[in-house]
Image 1 (cartoon, protein in one colour):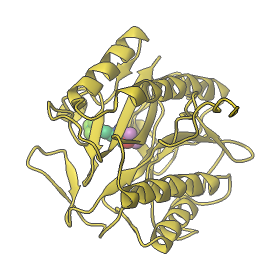
Image 2: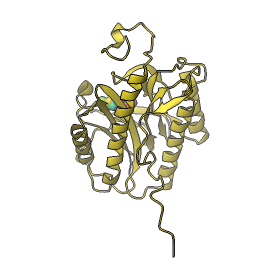
Image 3: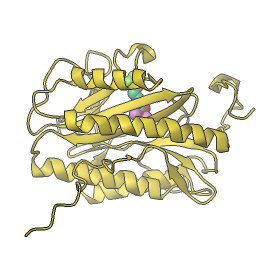
Image 4: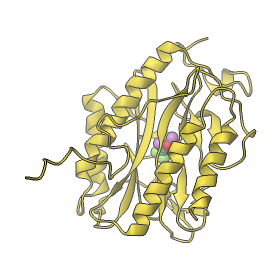
Length: 281
Ligand code: MF3
Ligand code: CO
Ligand code: CO
């Protein structure tokens, strides 16, 4: 069955990973672009004094206005339309009435379901001026995602992705979180395969054209270990070191990779150059 039904893991051959055709790629492009647009829309909102609840409301309203649904809302009881993970929060931070403050770094992770297909992406945002070590972590983490994506091609293994990410993170004296991974997705939010952000070439599964998954490395300035807070969701670094994450949804093509969640405004990285300045004099 191809792309039309609501196939679940339970009904699939054990170990078989769904390969999607052109119709699914078109649907993922649409879901991915809307998700990226939502993240673009949030950029001017991320300012000192703004609460993560306000950001969450903007995501929900954007979804409603665009006939989409935020996949995290009610997902295994998760209560919000996005995740907002500040400073030493690694992932799955729950939006709240706590205001952002100057110098914070925050990951906003949005998953929109459009016509039944999932676009899943996250970016880091800087709240005002951030310390140099925080900007360095953002750069390293973004480069880790880029290097992971560059390792995607048919015939390579998912271990090639993990190795590329781990090598770069550790060369930059950062660490890779082991407790969370990227994931297959499509009409399901979290599906096979698991995409580890560490490991060795040759491990994992062989990539084939038509596979859809996320790459979403979580990189720490300190040690890799995390713990979950008593809310049951919020993952934080045990040593309280800063943590960052970027996520894209991608598809494996005949020749390499298609990124579905690229920012239409070029805002994938927070300090991406703005419009050219007017010439002086
Ligand atoms: N969007 C997250 C991911 O990248 C999942 C969040 S699930 C939630 O896979 F329930 F915590 F919201
Ligand atoms: Co994801
Ligand atoms: Co996500």
